[in-house]
Length: 384
Image (cartoon, rainbow, N blue to C red):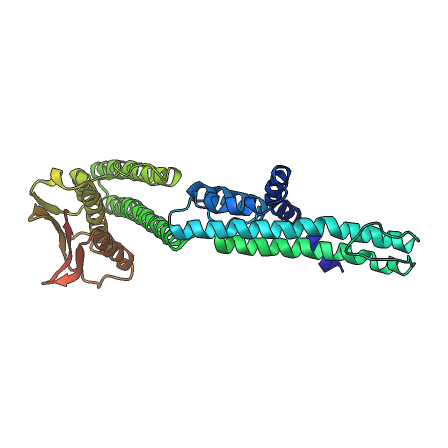
C-alpha cells in the first residue's frame, strides 16, 4: 500500500499532471469561439509544430515539468534543425493534446463518480450521470465509491510516466545533436588530456631541474656554485608557477585563449635551465622560427621541454644536442644525448608517450629510442 501511494507523494506527479492539462486550455478557449468544430485546435498544431522554435519551447516545458530533478533528461532544448525534427514535434503536440484530453476526462469524471456512488449509498439517486445509471440507491455502493479515485490516481501516475517517455522519444536529441554532443565530449576529454600534459611537462621539468641542481650544489661544496644553483632553482620555480597559473587559468575559464602559453621563441629559457643544472647543451636553430604557427610552436616548446627533462632525469651529466629546423613546410625537432650506463627505466615512459601524443594530434610523427649509441627524440610536425 505504501509503495502504491509513494508516487502520489512526489511533486513531479503533479507537475506532470499540470503539463498534461495545459493543451486542453487551448481547446477550452476555442470552444467559446466555435463549439461545433472542436477539432480545429488539433489542426492548428500542425503548422505550429513546423516552426523550429516550438521544439525548443516544448523541450523547455518538458524538462521543467516532466523531469525537473534529472540532470540528464534526454530531452532536447534546441530548435528544429531538420524536417525530421519538425515532424516529430508535430506528432508530439498532437499526442500531448490527446493525452491531455484523457487526463482532463479522468480528472473530472472520476471524482463525480466517487461522489455519486457515495450519494447512492446514502439513499439519493445520482442526477444526470451517463456513466452511472442508478435507479435505486443501495448502501452497497459505498464499497465502490473509492474505486474511481483509485482509477484517477493510477491514471495520473500512468499518464505522467507515458508522456515523459514520449517526450524523451519525440523531443529527444536527433542523430545530428547526438553527434554534436559526442564531439563536444571528445573535445572536453582532449582538453583534459592537454591540461594533464601541460602540468606534467611544466611542473615535472621544474622539479627535475630543481632536484638535479640541488644535488649538484650539495656535492660540489662550492659556495659560488651553490649560489648559482639556488638562483637557477628560483628562476625555474618562478617559470613553473607561471605555467601553473596559465593551466589553472584554462581550467577556470574554458573560453580563455591559449596564446599565453610559451612557444619555441622562448626556448632559450629551457636551454639555460638545463645548462644551469650542469648539463652541456649544444643547440642549433635554423629557419624562420618566428613564422611557425602558434599551435605548432607551443607544442614544439612542450616537446623540447619534455625531452630535456628526460635528459636531466635519466642521463644526468651527459651532454645533449638540440636541433630545431624549419624548412619544407615542417618543423623538425631533435634532441640527442649519449646513452647512460643504465638502461632508462619506466619513468621515461609517460613523458615519451606524451611526446608521441602531442605529435599525433598535430598530424606529425615522433621517433624515440636508441640510435647509433645515443638516445634520440626526433619529432616532425607539419606547419599547415
